[in-house]
Image (cartoon, rainbow over the protein chains, first blue to last red):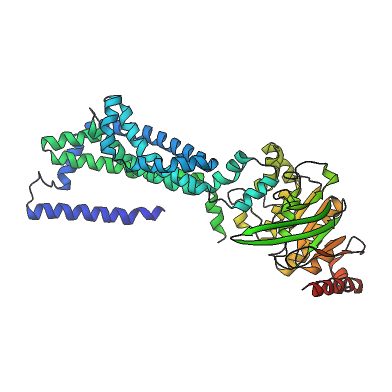
Length: 252
Length: 250
């Protein structure tokens, strides 16, 4: 994995260089497309603003993500234990994902005001779904013979769940959590667009209205870096939680 | 264990498959009993009934040694697949049965460690199943079953996937272990040599629908040595007897 960082880094540097050269040679208006150097200059000059607003977005995102993952896990486990609950709830869970989030977010603001709650709720609403779906699929992927064996040892449903189904489902669950993390970044920004007084989403609207395109690009850049770091943190947690996979591969 | 007139039919799609029909057999307490028969003759169905995972359509299974009540959770069972959990170490796989019985994890590990040398797993306590050979995986699975200390243990073709040489040494090993820790063993196999070498009693099953067509006492003194027993004249007489019965039923 260590050498894996160089190819994407080289590609990124190449693209940014091409962008800079194109803007300069073609003489594009900086209001439409500022060169990367201008964006970088803006970012360093206004680092304080970006960091404080980034922190606001990060806290909304993490709160909503945590709630979403916990709700997703609980729903997944309950759907696996109670088949009737799965049949009853599944279509409605799908329905929550069909409702456009920008349409729901204003209602949340109406209910909870310009606080952290509507943003965290938006994030949770988007992130719980992939976790729930992957948890159900992962839990039902356990070898039925293993469940039968545990029953001959006298294990009840909870023991079967904690000893066999949950560990077997962990790789799937983490796939869901990774998708949830990616969606959380979008959710936090959408939540802020609808009603907020700070945060990176708010900052984007602010720069857009004032025609400060360089600021807008700098904000997007900060958001992107934050999202990438969070995504890889989840991957790191996954490697830690499923460390046995390394041993399993050693002999193959 | 007394089995009388046990029948079991299950549905396979729209077809009704009679796996067992009028099966009678006795499993004397503390004996090594083998059920031998061709593939798909209902051997595994019979074991599922013995360990309480399934119930017979008709007939009775009495286990005076265990008293009355549900069989599930009271009879030791080792399935064909080793079913080791790849996320648990050798020690922690061996303790699965004890943990299900409500044993404290630390204490269960302690008891598993005491058996590592006897089961040839010493030095591999912290290895993962993916790092073990087929024979070692089977010994972990067997330790998991025997650690529960059940009076009756059902072993479903435990050596079926092993190569012939590993198999012979595992058979000898199992007999030694059984001689030290007398319990009732019901061993299922499709290998007549294996059945005769290991058992006190061999029950021969017919092809589907399965039932016991021949029960044979194996009057060979213990302890048995593999090379001596399987090449002896008496062993071959018994084998001819079983093959003849099997031939007539086909």
